[in-house]
Length: 184
Image (cartoon, rainbow, N blue to C red):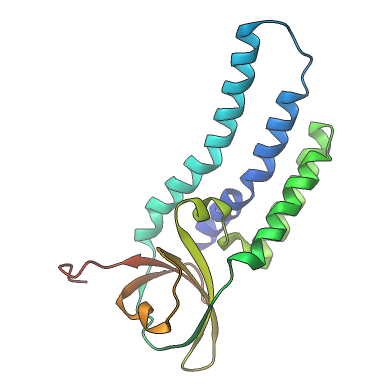
């Protein structure tokens, strides 16, 4: 399931590339002087933007089926949100420069492949909207891991102790805050 889930995460993190292109395409359609046409354009754009958000929400639901991990003794924890954002902004600018759907498909497939093999699919810009942050952390053994944690930005590595994580792969984990009355 992890490979399949990894592939779905890759699609989820790159769907914004397609959404930006579709919105660009819709606004570049020949214009008609009609209120219905204007409503159709805005409705099409809204639906296009909602698709990546919905896909990310669905994947978020399936996190609970991944293996649970306890990560207690983190030596360091550094915010990494800003490292990935320029990559996705680059995708947006590339999408705006593509003027036909055939080239779009080729470029999207290449981005999908590179994102899948590079393990950057775990950074999903939509999760920023959901309140998640990405961190580079170091374990007691000196292993570098990626933690995806929902909530306010962590300023102290000890804040990680009261969280449960789900393993996305050997070096990437996503959090789930545990309520005090919950036994896990």
